[in-house]
Amino acid sequence: MSKKSRLEFVMVHGFSHGGWCWYKIRALLEASGYKVTCLDLKASGIDPSDTNTILRWEDYNKSLIDLFSNLPPTQKVILVGHSAGGLSLTYAIHRFAKKIHMAIYVAANMLKYGFVTPQDYKDGDPDLSRYGDVNDMIYGEGGDQPPTSMIMKQEFQREILYHLSPMEDSSLAGMLLRPGPLRAIQGVSFEETEWSGRNADSVPRVFIKTLHDRVLAQDQQDAMIRRWPPSQVFALESEHSPFFSTPTLLFSFLLKAVDSITTTT
Image (cartoon, rainbow, N blue to C red):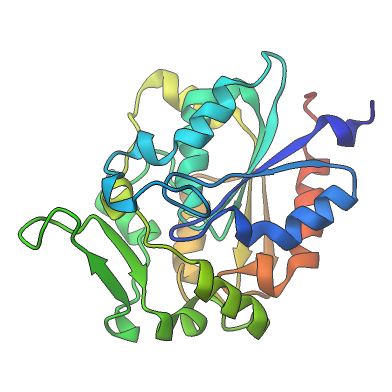
């Protein structure tokens, strides 16, 4: 059995997206002999759950937890996360470090313990206020309660998320985006203990910067890299969605990242 056929990529989407956003990358990886799983987190993609009922982080990440719980004892995967999907990668590192070959953050939140300190919010929480009121809030528990989910208004999606992507991809995304479970993801943090800290630093990490990002600013990406240095950093001339705008380059960086890690799976 070849090394490629033994390596599995597990792709984790960002807020409001689904496994569908990786379709170009999946095709390139599979054509090169790799196994690829594109997860739908709860109430995302084709998962039928009502996003307004997903109030806990563990519920939102159930498909990721189930994947690791069902892996054979000796199998490891390569985790790739985009945007807020980076929080899911870090969560998995804390819980399932021995089952992760490496973690690759693509324009993603790379915060060692999630949103714990004011600096975490400064580095990892997107500030889109310069664009105006860009999000629609949904109050699944009534107007007197905090919002349960959120989606970017369609008129802002291309300008903020996909401004360098082919028009057909941004049009497709506009048809497939779903409200994300705001309550489940807001303020998510992972317990800072000696045990979880050892796990967090035991998994090789790579960060792929997006140089024309209108969601995670360059100073935010650089700050996360400085605070929790990965083993390698790559840079893409892309907006926030390189799986659409620069898929071939993103694919090549994923392969370079894997080749850079010499640990045995």
